[in-house]
Length: 344
Image (cartoon, rainbow, N blue to C red; front, side):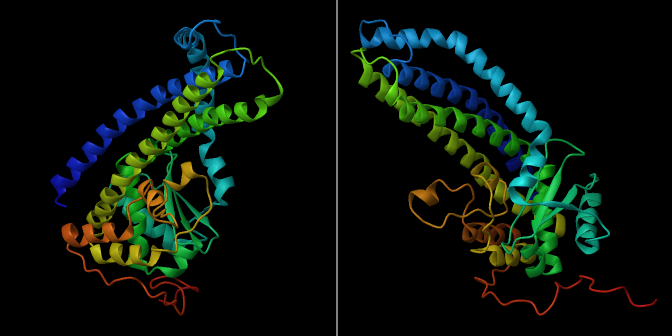
């Protein structure tokens, strides 16, 4: 990708992100309305005693009161997530902060990349996992963090590690991290609301009035609203993250001037990126491919490694070595210090 082309992709992604993020509040309204219809169908909320249209209109009129309440709760949730997101991510993934003293070579790679773009060096974190993965988090300058797994550090060469760090730093530079974290928070809120709908369906067997003649249509329509809202939330998250991976790969090549390193890093990560974490977090990963194919692959948050490699070969001028055979290194990656430097 030429520089002007890359910048155009970044602008397009950011514009699309604003439009897609604006859709989350609409999806919340869909799901809340569906919840109200389900509760009305099970008799937990009063109906009109008339036709189905009257009951649906009554549920719609309640939105004037329930929506502000829902947004207040969502605002509290957002504030908690804003200030505590990194701590929660560390707990969920087992990530720990490392300093230059404990990881000098890895830290220097990240620092040099940040300096080359005039950025404050993000906090460096490491997860003691054999999976090959990495991700960036944070909402603003001074809060950004880049996390890599121990498996990635032990498997990749110095140039490949630099390419991966450049990929994650590109997410920071392009504000992808902030967008994805905000989307994850919104998706989490929607997931909880959607779960309330289904939990209400399960636990409603022992209570509520069942004298509403429109009960079954209300329940079915309510579930349909909730299902559509939840499915669209998944699609939005997918659309936010998929195209950004191509741009971040190109950004890594722009930073390192080494397309072959990014390609070989992706080949090593391919099929070895397993890392625990909730769905909202996994969309931030360097790679997050589902085990299956078909519909599961259709809703994947990341494009296939092969397509990413093809793009780097076509637009970055790199060479694809083909799938990695899994050869292990006899020692730490090239360029990594294992003891004190020699005298002089």
